[in-house]
Image (cartoon, rainbow, N blue to C red; front, side, top):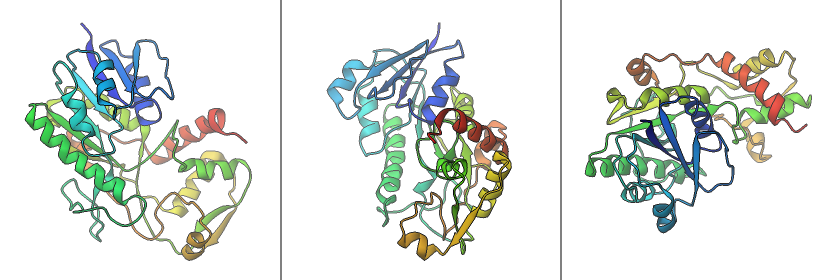
Length: 305
């Protein structure tokens, strides 16, 4: 008998790659719950349409089954995980929540490990409330899963890149590169940051399903390589085979002109991914290899010219 998997979200980026991969395995019956704005129409995947904040509708559309695992890609506000678990009929054998490495309190201590300090409230800036809510949802996951005796696993990705990425991260550079335009680069930036290839997240999720070693644990998902803006340009030149024209600008100029560079310019974002790597004996995809695949996909399927 196939094992039922309930996936919340899962049709845009990380979840899409995960569902596409898991659907090829014959061991699972996949039930996807989201607002239906981007239907996957994958054979073997049953899609249920509702807004998770509509509790009455959610309870109506989620099939009353026993679930081998629930994977939650899109809980962003407190009570969303509690409301989901309270409205799922049948048993849940594992709950996996996709959080973010943004949950850590800013400090000069690097790398950030899973037990590094978290903020006690929302920090200033556009990401402050989002990050704090994610931390509150991690606590909510632990509390509600303990209440219902459900093993949980929390995964915190660093910057995610790869096919279907809707965030203007690598695509910011790809568009300029493919249109032969000059790419702005911060001249004073020494910041280092890390990535995780979206296909690595899917592979980690596959390995976490039913795996007692990851029960009641939280993990950073961050490849070892430290990347800077200069390193990014070097990688983009190699994966594209093109020489890139750059324009170096001060950080003040970039901020003043609202140039939407997607990565930190004046602070490190460094996390240890050693715990998940050791637990699963997992090897992260080399950045050059993952970005080459991403560029080829983007050039073929996403670039609008």
